[in-house]
Structure formats: C-alpha cells, structure tokens
Length: 311
Image 1 (spheres, helix red, strand yellow):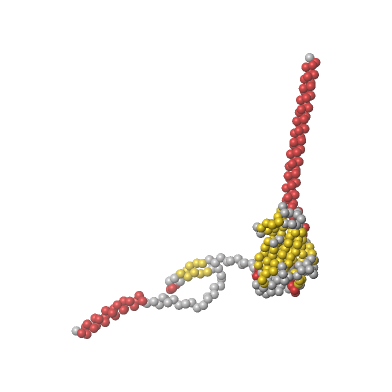
Image 2 (cartoon, helix red, strand yellow):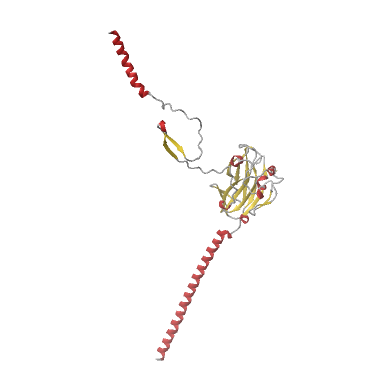
C-alpha cells in the first residue's frame, strides 16, 4: 500500500516538474516574441528618423569637392570645396567672372561659378572612392566670356564614359548664369555603372573635360556625393528658361452680318487689335441675280425690234 502511495506522489512530482518546464518554455517563447517585436519597432523608428532627416546631412554625404581655379570655399549647404589641386600643374585658373553677378546662384556661392579652370587640351581630376553604393557627380559651370553659342563646346567623360555630350553652356542657359550637370552613377562589386554602361572600377573616379572643336574645355567647380539625384540642391529657377503657362483661348462663332459668313472670336484676351484694315467682301455688292433677266429681256427685244422694222 505504501508503495502505491509513493508511486503516486512520485508521479505527481514528475507531473509538476513537467508542467513547470512547459511553463518556462512558454515564457521563453513569449520573451523571444516580445524581443522580436521590439526589434522590429526600433528598426521602423530608425528608418523613419532617417527619412525625416535623421541620417547624414548633405555635407556629410559629400566625399570630395573642389572649387576649380579658386580658393577653398564653404557653401550655404555646408559643403567644403577645397582649393584647386591642379593649381600650377594643369591648365590655367581664371577669375574673369568675379566682375559679373551670376544668375541662379545665391550671393554667398557665386564665387563657385565666377572662377574656373580651363586647358587647351583634355584635362581632369581623380577622385578616390572606397565604398560601394550610389553616387552623384555634380559639375558646376557658367559662361562668363563668350556672348553667343557655338563658341565653347566640349564633352565630359567619367572613367572613359561620355556622360555629357556637346556641352554649350551659353546655349543652355545664356551668359553669366549658373548651370549644373548632374551625373548619377553606382559602384558595386568592382564595377562602375553610368549612363547604362559598365566598366571595371579600380578605386579612382576620373572626371575628364574633353577638348572639342570649339575653344577649350573648362569647369568652375565639382563635387561627388553619396545619394540619389533627388538629394542634390537645385539652382534657383531661370526666368528666361521657364515656359509660361499657355492660356486656353475659347472660340465662339457669331453671325457675320451682311457678310453672311461665320467669324471666330477669341475670348482669350481682353484687347483685340486688328492686324490691318478689313478687306472688302467682293461678293457684298454682287447683283448678278438681278442682271440676268435684264440681259435675257434685252436679248429678246433687239431681234423683235429688227423684225418689226423690216415689216
């Protein structure tokens, strides 16, 4: 009898231990589930903070920037343009544009477009890039010398790829006006991808300004940044290049009085100016319908009178 009681107590003890083990397992599963949910929430919050501006600033994304032909400059976005490393080595520096105000640029950053470096042959810069990812090359130009198109035309190459073809700054924006060329590219698995073309990347980005048939290639400033095209600060709008909204002109048809025709009247403008004196209607005094019976009667009367005279 005692043996049966002991077995019963043992079974109860084992059952209790098993229940406790199951309870512990359930608690661990619950804890893991809660931890996973917290991690997901934190990830979403971090992504939202990044999207709301919590990520690197524009200046922190820029990995290389140069004020070509000029001194170091800190622009309004916090980008630090260093002094031109080609000074005394390649090409010529020019500050001819400092006498001119540059349209589309903020007053603080006009110096980036007023100085430039040009060369009588193809020249360029080398930009070291270590990390893979999406990048943007921003090239800054302004035409401060020539006053018409087809005076300075050149190409821009990126590691041998033509990324800007037949650049005529004056034709694009006119004289003393800022113009940016934005070139997106990516580097992944040792490959450079730009403009739908792919080539091997050795850690250096070579930006070249290619000599053409019209004068010398040049550049005012340039920088390379991580990001997409939407991250690049935009220039101020160009009044001369903006297309005015076309006014919808409604036309109505009215009777033309004695002309008997229909005349289209434009309601798009309040003041209507005639382009010249109105041309008389050649059919307004047409009496041909009245002359016909007179001619017939006259034709009948003459033979009749002739016959009567012979009698």
